[in-house]
Length: 83
Image 1: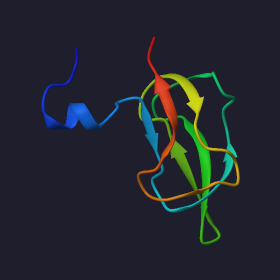
Image 2 (image 1 turned 120 degrees about the vertical axis):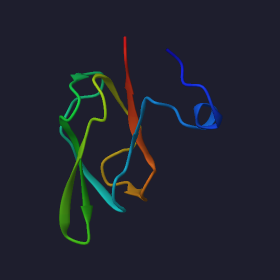
Image 3 (image 1 turned 180 degrees about the horizontal axis):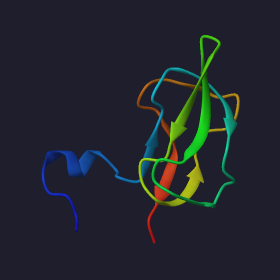
């Protein structure tokens, strides 16, 4: 069921977004791995505090950002595609 409305054209439901600004220090899940909703998949270091990023839905993780990359809130870390 596709979303209808102005947000549907802009927001890709598969996109995994950075929840804090900082540096991506670790991926907890291999590229192409199946994940479950709520599972921690990445770690961002924001001013010496590590924040875990959880999968917003179940599916297959595709990494979009390399470890060491600087991210801002809302930046695309990767995607979680549903089969």
